Image 1 (cartoon, helix red, strand yellow):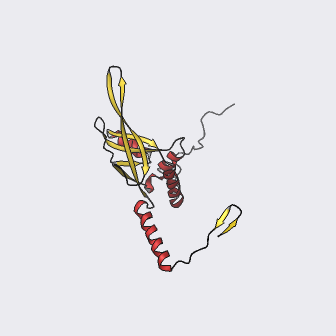
Image 2: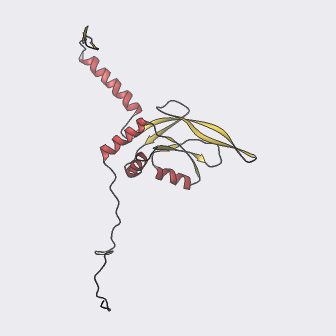
Image 3: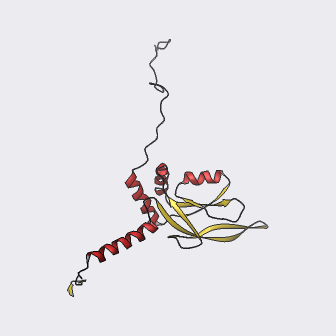
Length: 180
């Protein structure tokens, strides 16, 4: 062993090619099991909080813990979609990026069944009388979405198409009154 300043160098062991390949294959399997280009498992823990409104007591649910991986009672797969790239960018550029969890119908005990990083998708769920819970997006998910956007490009800017050539332009037409 040789010391170089603050670093310590250990002798390199000669590894056989089969050992290196088996370690790479094992590592690749572990990475593929938990991650893919557009899919991540996320474990969610919900907690009920009693809330007093005048004389009534309501139960309000919130996400207590949101962790990466497939361990826990409520595991959902966050899947990114090419059609939602603009919504992901909008979410990432906000002050606090959020994840949204669909948790069954309003007024019932929550049963998480879907998760998204798109506010547009979450708004659609709420329009359908679904209960939507939100939580701050972990930094690891933010980085993963950023890399997804970098790989697939930003969503194209949608522009309104003209109905006919020249539509929407002001035309020079002679006026009847001449200014004096």
